[in-house]
Image 1: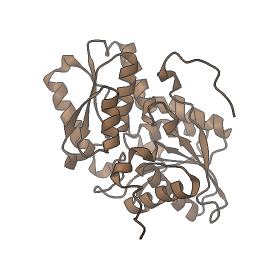
Image 2: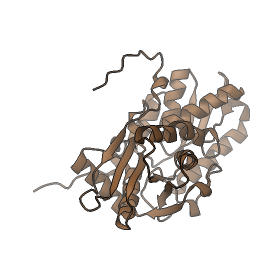
Image 3: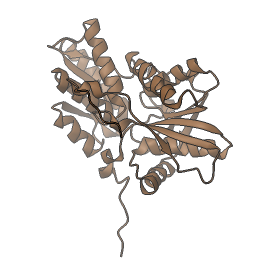
Image 4: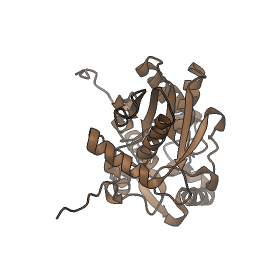
Length: 309
């Protein structure tokens, strides 16, 4: 096992360069498809959103839009908020986050653990309600805030173009046939797919969203019924599939039981898409992104087992 010998002077230097893990869940039935996943919980803030949050904050610093007297503010369903809170703590900025009231208890506690303030929006309005509320707060006091606006900031997908996509190409030696990832802000999918398509236009890219507006896939957006992010670029997605909630949950549970990998709701959704891809005859190498670990969803009941008599 390789041992890190360098001493890092900031936790932020550990963002990125996450491992690629072989997933064997479908191998017996579909031996023609190799499946790999980027394990994004290895980022110091515990999710893929560390990449985008750090990129957006540093872009704001370079442009002079973020100064020590301004508060970082954004809407978030959880992971980006945790990442902002971590980055803000490491860099010495105040952070205020607008979150739907029904996000998991673990995410709320992580945000406040880093010292950030939470303003709760209506849980029935989901991420769109949080977006509307954060815009209202900024309109009242624009001079107080730096608003990265994760849904519309080009630095979000660029973090994945330069980071996630480049890492996947290096880790696979360019041996990739399919890329499958979920849609939230859409930054992970857009930036990574754009980089992969530039390398080889023949790589098939499949974006995954919930199959219905009323879903239980925390972190994913049903684009047809949502405020569509400005960074969304449909041209880099060969296909967009809608994942059902319960089958996604069950695949997440299977992965934990059969391979010891604990993931969240959205990872279950991409596993559903990969199984569908395999069932329709997909062959070659598929790479996906597991945005975070399942320990952020324990209070949601995702892994709540049945009591034994």
